[in-house]
Length: 125
Image (cartoon, rainbow, N blue to C red; front, side):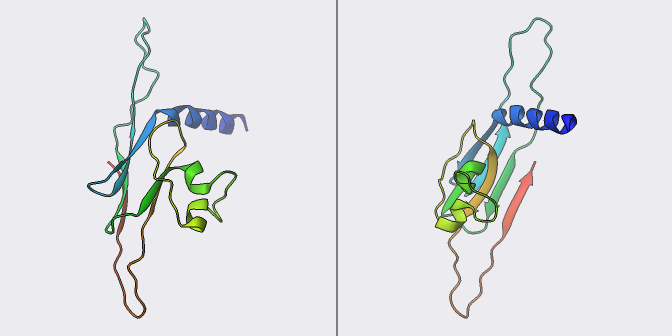
């Protein structure tokens, strides 16, 4: 139990350094780690590097996005009935100081009797 609690505290601490942004040109939600250091004499680096940019994009330009878990789930929400899915409305908010996650909201191009192709991409590079 103590190991799990320590891992959770480390996760909670390090998520404060994740910054999300929506790239309108590519219709992609991006996440990267913001590094900053404290002026300490022994020059130990307490903020570990994360040399990746995570992204979520789709072949259809999203109508909205959520980059924070609370925005997606809603206040006191849950994964079975996320607020964004239930309401059909995204908060379109990105930045820092939240609980980073990635969700995009696309309007379906489907028409009765017709098909459509949708490609979702998610990666960290």
